[in-house]
Image (cartoon, rainbow, N blue to C red; front, side, top):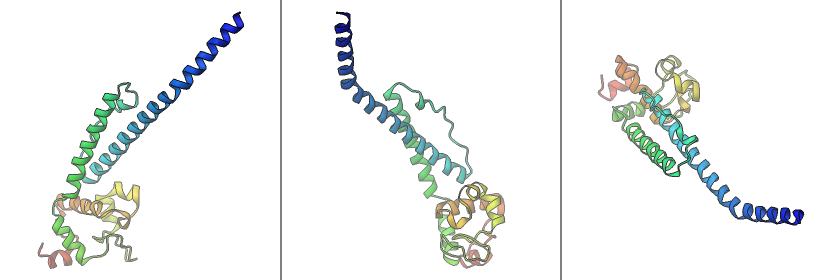
Length: 177
């Protein structure tokens, strides 16, 4: 009798696990996906904040251990909004028209012409170390950076007091100096 009760309990447990297991697996998979999306948005936001030279948005990374689905959804919306605001600022780089004019007289955005100048604004290694050290470490020389990364590094140099003088000929042709 003990054996038949144990088998019945085991059978009920197996059926229960069979019915509930997939639901739990789907929920865990969805949670993992949400956490991964939050992490990707956070990393993208932080990347552009470093490139622009502004402070990183703080986080507690509480979504990793949060039980509430509603809370994870809220955090996901929060980071989507932050990433959107940062991207809006990225594409509206100050002096964008001026950087594009200088670029017209320099080279392609992915140029590595062998003359020790790189990218669409033809930055040398010293310039890249001074104003784009994060990108130089993470991506290599400016010919591997996006156009917006190159313009933001140039903008950092501009704001430091260098103005458009690192590009004397093309800046003069554009009427900037």
